[in-house]
Every structure is written in C-alpha cells, then in structure tokens.
Image (cartoon, rainbow, N blue to C red; front, side, top):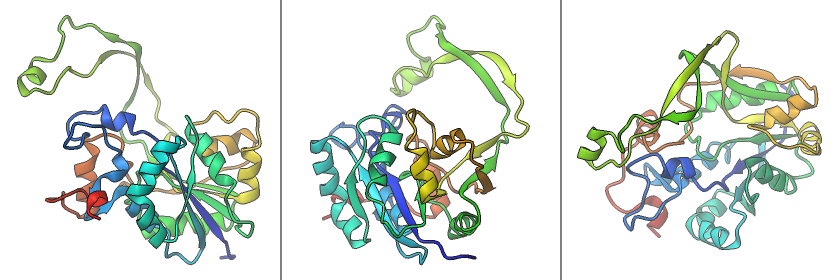
Length: 275
C-alpha cells in the first residue's frame, strides 16, 4: 500500500434536533435539550469516542473537530470538550452556520498542506471498527474517493409528504404512558426497487486535491461529501461497511449503541460534567 497522510475532519456543529425531538431520554436533568455528542459511552462522551477512532493511527496526521458556528455555543462546546480534545491532539475550529457542508468547507481551510487525503467522519458514529477504517484507508491509497456502504435489507416505501389525520389528538397508549403526541402517520405512495441500493456510512476518504475541487463548486448542496465528488463526474469507489457502525440519530439509538460497544449506561454524572 502506498503511503498516505490523512487529515480527519469530524463535523460537530449540529444542534441534535432529531435527537432532541425523538422522545424520552434526550433532555438533561433540568429539562434542557442536550447534544447527542455529550452522551456517555463507558465514561467517555460520544464525541471523544469518535475522535479516539483516529488519533493513534499512523496514517492520520491531523484530526479536526469542527464545532458550532455561534460564538456562545462554541464557548460552551469548548468548556465541555476542549480539554479532552486537546489531550487527544485534535484541533477545534468553528463550523458552519446552518448546513453540514458549510462545516466541512470551514474545516477544509485548516487541513495541513502535507496531507494527501482527507477523511470525513460523523461525530455521532463512534463504533466503527479498526478493520473498517483499515479497509477505507487501504482503498483510499489506490483510488481517489472511497466510501463504506452496507446492503439495504428492508423493503423501501415512498410515503406521502403530508400526514394523515387519524381523528385523535394523540395516541391513547402514549397519553397513558405520558409520552405525548403520537408520531405522524403517512400514506404509502409506492415501493422502491432496492436492487443496487446501499446505505452509506463514514468515514468517507478523498484525495485532498479532489475534495478541494469538489468544494470549489458553486452549488454545495449535498447529503454527503461523496455527492459533491460525483457531481464532478469523478468515480467514487465503495468498500464494505459494517452493521456496528451505526449513527446516533435518535434517543432510542443510544441503548443499541451502548450494547454494540459493550458499555453500560452511566450511574453518576454525565461524562462531560465530571471535571
């Protein structure tokens, strides 16, 4: 394998809106919304676990964590995570104001000149194995753009944009349990052929010059970084992802993530409040 020098970007500027809107367990003891990146995984935060995936790897020359854009939010972010990120050798920079691609674009300005490749990894995806990262990095040494993917096993349906009014204000069981309103009901509009479809994971790895070209385009609207490379007409190669590499998106994902990683829920204070 040819030598590569990887700068890792971990976008961490989001506000965890889906996490905080997903049900019980997404608020702190005072009832305030909390970031999913602060959740405890065996005495360490989700963000710390994600950074630790990379900080000791020989191929990695830099880890950049792109935090909130807002100055006040960034100060709070530094208070919660700054010391531990510094101990891991990670650089903390301001991310974008609204969209994920803005955060990656901001972090790209801090990538080292001597880096040959840039890896972008979800801050809320802390369970990727070393074997997966090996596969992605090995392929990146030979190809310009590499992403890990997993087969789509479930039947896929297209549903209506609007919700169905079932004639009740809330699900009766939800009311009894005090869980608030039921989640919206939608109408099925069709079934999607899943042949050739895959689910995309991170880390996604690109030759630095290729990613810089992708982010030099006028339209950066995208769902992931590979989409921008595809828009250039460049080839994106896939490698096998893994089921354990789940992304913490909703509150119900947290116990699954803990089970996958073999850690227990905290019994004391949250990991980011212990010092």
